[in-house]
Every structure is written in C-alpha cells, then in structure tokens.
Length: 349
Image (tube, rainbow, N blue to C red; front, side, top):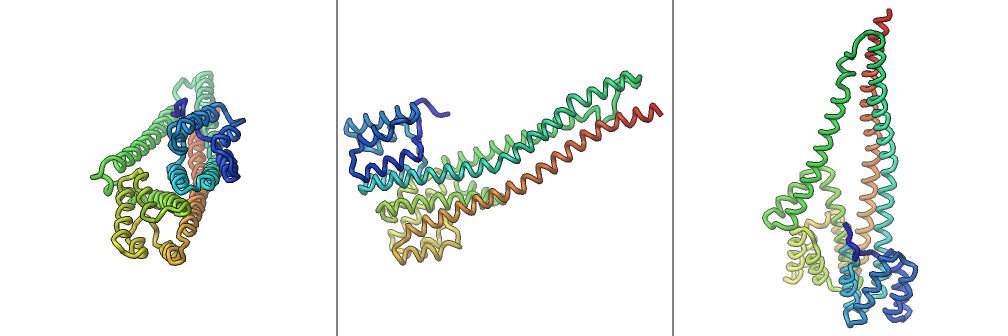
C-alpha cells in the first residue's frame, strides 16, 4: 500500500519538464511551473524535491528522498543522465518510457473486460438458479404432496458447486503463495537462486513469458544507459546492482567480468542465458557498427510486441474456455432444475 509521502508524476510531466530544461530554464523554475495543476500528492512531492535541491542536494537524490515512485530502469536512466549532463534529454525519455508502460498496461486490462463480463454474467445466472429456482421447486414439491425430498442432483447441487469453487480458490491461493515463495527465495537466498530458475524453466508458457519480460526489461535498461553515455561494463554493473533476482545479478556480473578480461562481445553474449539465441546476430551487428544501444532498444520493442501478442492469444483462448465451463455449469443447474419437474409430471400422469 502506498504511503502518504509516495507519489508518481504522470508521463506528461516528465516530457514537459525535460523540454523546458532543454530550453535552458533552471531546474527549480521547471519544478515550479511544471508542477502547477497536478494532484496535491504530486505537487507536494515536487515541492519536497525543490526543497532538497535548494538545500544543495543532487536532483535525482532529492527525487528519491521525496518519495517519488518510478520503475527501476527509470531511476538508472535518470542517474546516468545526471552523471553525463544529459538530464533534460533523459527526463523526456523517462516520460516516453512511462507512457509506453501505461499504454501496455491499458491494452492488457482492456482485453480482460470481455472475459470478466462473461464470467460475471455466468455467476449471476448460476446464483439465480441455485438460490431462487431450486427453493421454488422445493416449495412446489411440498405443495403437491411429494415432500421436501428432491432428486439427488437437485439436493446437492449447491454443495457440489461450492466445493468445486473452494478447490479452485485453494489451488489459486496455493499457486500465488508458491510463486511468492519462489520469488522471495530467488531474491534473498543464494543457494536457491539457481534451483528456482530451473523450476521456472520447467513450467510451460510461464517460462517463455518470464524470459521475454526479463529480456525486454534488460535490453531497454542497457540501451537507455548506453544512449546516456555509460560504457557497457558500467551499464552491466548498474543493471546487476538493480537486479532483484540473485541469478540474474550473477549472470550480469559474469558478463561484465568476461568483457573486462578481454573476451569478445559475441562470445560473451553467446554464453549469457539472459538473451535469446535469435537476437545474437542483432547484438553482434550493433556492437560492430557502434550502435548497440539502438539494437538493444529495438530488441526491447520487439519483445514487448511478442509479449502483448502472446497475452492477446491467451486471452482469446480464455474466452471460449470460460464459455465452455460456464455452459457446463449452467447445464448442470438446468438439469438439476428439470429433474424435479420430470418427477412432478410423472406424479401428475
């Protein structure tokens, strides 16, 4: 849960502030002008940044101390921009980075509306049949002198569905708990870092998604640092320091050590499991042409597109799967509703 002192400026603020810095305005004037009209938490946070800069603190350090919340790659980009004197350009890039993240998040959540709506309508129909229709059938059975006893399926349909949902809920909670435990172990315990990575590689689908997200994040991270003027060994060191998982941190440190030992870049990249084999020729071409950062950012963009395409495909398969399960569940309820009617018709006949 976000505390009262934590805030995150919108992506438009970053672009506007960066452009004003490029015009030669003082950073304090930029904060005062670009912060007008923003929500009170953001405006108060920018005021804390202004106070830190007025006291002689560094700009990015003042942002961190003010409670500003940004992605890890954004912080590294800002640090690199301040060190190389390209803070204005980097702030514009930070705004574009946050805009891309917001666009991807909006596209993903937008695709989930239809499955969520179908699932909600299905549960509503089942609830109506289960809690209104079945009791009505019991009342009709009693009024016709057939007693309170209903067919077995009608009598136990609520227990069957309730236990099924409970099992699914427990399975989901256990899956979430297991994922959090593996994430905790991979970030805190060196002995578990490599076994956890192997466990993830055994899970189909999740392994590809996890590798793709890591590759996109790392390529964007390194590309933005290289564009800001940071050398490749220094960029790898910064990426290793900011990496959450110990396995990824170890791999980045090994890549940096191989480069410093004089091993060629193609050999280093080929031995690094953080990048897929399909992108090795692109990375080698980028290194040979002196435009490695351009190729890294292109890889990040391609990976983001692959991830969105894969998620869209999974969601498209999710919709008919939900419809199938709901059809089976509602069909069972309708069958439980029809069985007492058949008994009543037989009694009347």
